[in-house]
Length: 237
Image (cartoon, rainbow, N blue to C red; front, side, top):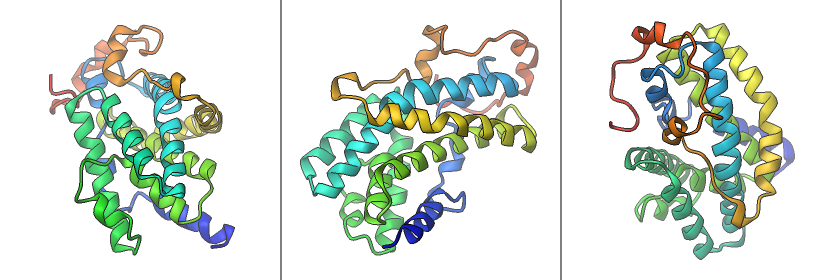
């Protein structure tokens, strides 16, 4: 597959029209809005950017890279190990279920698109989104770093879409958030791909309440708690 074709396949994977339901979940942001930690564009940028640096960079991206290499090497033991590692690192059963749901949905789609390795994945033990996304990018001939950039972009776009809906924000504010996050993604991917096994780990959303350095400033936010979603939080508590 040519570089141009591979790039087009990556764009296809990044499309919001990809039928996997990823834009229906906030992955922790709903809780932050309901708690009053995130209430406007500035606090959303701080929250999402903090999670990009501390969770996506330190955990998701390096595990994605290992899964990509495992698919390339047909290393079933490595695949199972790193997939289980990432799922176990999710903060709650609900977040693990979300990850499994996205992974299974993408695996079903990939199987229907002719990627045979995805067919047994959807019937066996839980597989996360990173495992399925790594399979897609590797089999479509997308370079590892390009695939990791795409993975980080999907995560950021999901979070911004959730913020626009939950806070709520205007569409222009959402685009400003994406501009700021996109400037952070390349460095996060480079740093994440360079991490050694013993350095993997991330501060997950529910841990933010115990970590002042990653939680957004709440000044002024509690005046707007009525804007927060009244639905069930991502943490079930």
